[in-house]
Image 1 (spheres, helix red, strand yellow):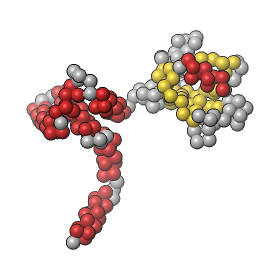
Image 2 (cartoon, rainbow, N blue to C red):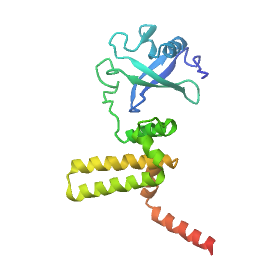
Image 3 (cartoon, rainbow, N blue to C red):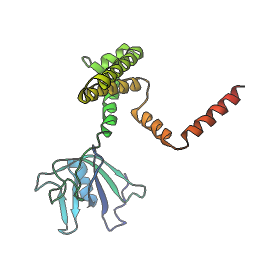
Image 4 (cartoon, rainbow, N blue to C red):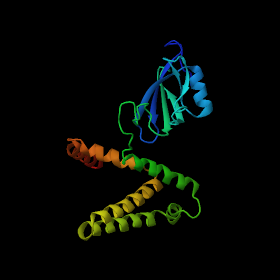
Length: 217
């Protein structure tokens, strides 16, 4: 990165974001020395404008910001710093400096889960159930999706909500494994659903079918 520290008199804003939840935790400022110390120690360090010195977040409270990655913006004068926080970030004891709870949207875990499954697909470690599914091939993976879907249907019609959630989770896991084997992502499903949410979706689909029919004539 070629960070422009000169534009603001030696400082650049550093937006701190939780790498897992994607929530913004705080805003600080870094000079070149703070940036380099952050890189070297793995703990986010700022330049304190009030005390006129370096300060590593958590050096007093123990609530460190453990560095995951740093990106600069298009003008090379603002940093996005992704971290794993230890404890609350704000000095007032809240998770963020805006008083918000730093909670993960559970839907984001589906992406995290597929990242893990993709890693299993690449490494194929012995003793892993996911590895065994990949080894058995697409037909077996597809069969498992069907089996788990049937279990979910049974719980929906004759079981409890708790068991329905359990079986639906099994179905979702096996579906993600199947998608991974076909080089597809769960986000592809979300994109398709988003496309269908468009009020003009049915009209567009009919137009596409009409076009395809004309081309085949």
